[in-house]
Amino acid sequence: MRKWRGNPWAVLVTLSLGFFMTLLDLTIVNIAIPDMMSGLGGSLDQMLWVVSGYALALSVLIITASRLGDLRGPRTLFAAGLAVFTLASIACGLAPTATALIAARIVQGLGAALLTPQTMTVIVAVFPAERRGTAMGIWGMVAGLATLSGPTLGGVLVSAVGWRWIFLVNVPVGVAAFVLTFLVVPDIRPSRTHRFDLTGVLLSAAALFCLAFGLQECEKYQWGPGIWLLLAVAGALGAGFVRHQQRRQDREPLVPFALFKDRNFTAMTALVGLVSVAMLGLVLPFNLYLQSVLHLSAVKAGLVLAPSSLVSMTVGPFAGRLADRIGGKYVLLTGLVCYAAGILAITLIAAPGSVWYAFVPATLVTGLGVGCIIAPMSTEAMRHIPPQLAGAASGVNNTVRQIGSVVGAAAAGALLQGRLAAELATGKTYAAAFTATLHTTALLPLTVLAVGAAACVMLRSRAARPEAAGVSAPAGAGRPAVGR
Image (cartoon, rainbow, N blue to C red; front, side, top):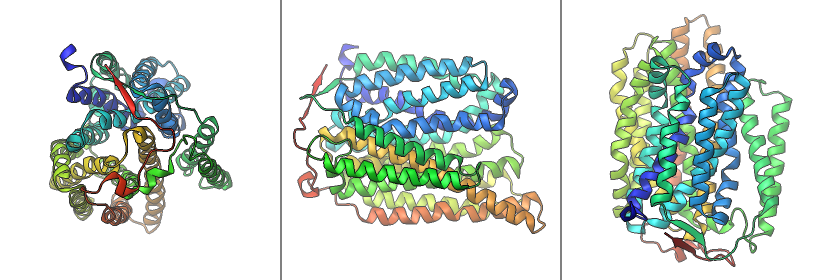
């Protein structure tokens, strides 16, 4: 294995194994909720916390984990995240009660948060700029495949061997990735000792917790006073965090404001959140439509979405390579248009008596759109970021991605429930009411994608130099040293 040590493509494969597991576990659990309820005797509320506890820990801790990667080295944090995630997966698969499963899922989210931001940091460090788009294309392909294949793979595992295997399947993958980490991933270390901003970590974690928890629980508590108070506290803590960071810009801040002087990073960080909202805004209502209106099984509903995953997986690397050659703006705009066209086609085809195969062409178009979005979006975000700021940039970008998923789920859920109740009140059958609701909820992802297209227009050309973008490392930041 010595010849593979430090090889960029071997490193990318190793990083992708860990990254795939963390994103897969965001969506794979949803399909197993009925079986987990019957197997553990848990309530629906407890099972929803099995889903949201993982997402909450992941959302809250990513910025902190990215900073720890800067301090201790991204390989160390990636390996630690793999170890925590794999052990927590065993605990999930063996959980005797619903409470134990929730606790294990929160720990699993911690492991995912430790490893996720390190993937982008290492890619920036080991790939030269001219090949980074292709690497990000494969990274994006993994992200799209994991997110979209969760329901399909989950349905197969639940039907074939039981719900516990949606967690236990992570174990051999986690062990393999852990071993490969020390065999092929270089030990990237800062050239000087960094400081840890404990106050910033506490403020950011508290603000993100209040925001994510409030959005996840808003429907349960019907947007009551407690939810609004929690969101107000999140806003106040967020303002305190920004003020604290403003004072520390010359002393290694948790979030260097210099990142946002780069127009590409700012635009693409906004876009990553918008795309996350759009993906949840489509997948959640459409999956429910397939099962509750067309009465497809969980496995069949997942298979209807599978073409999107396959096309996205195929297109991603080519889209990344094309973005390297001509710049990401036009590739991204093409992807956003395709994704919007696919959503519109799904909406027009959806009817109480539609056949499942009528949706295949539309899901192929959405897959083409996702494949053209994910890789260039990541490449353009990191194109002008100096290596010494890559950890902070990755943490901010991935945090926005996760918060976008939480916002998308909350917004889609609220819109879905509100419109369905209104449609049923008119005397329509459930199938007709849900179909009409699907037509309305499609406005959410379509609107968000239109805003995302406006963000793409802000992109600088690929020829722009980092100095032109105004990005420079904070005072005292040294270049990373790479060890083998």
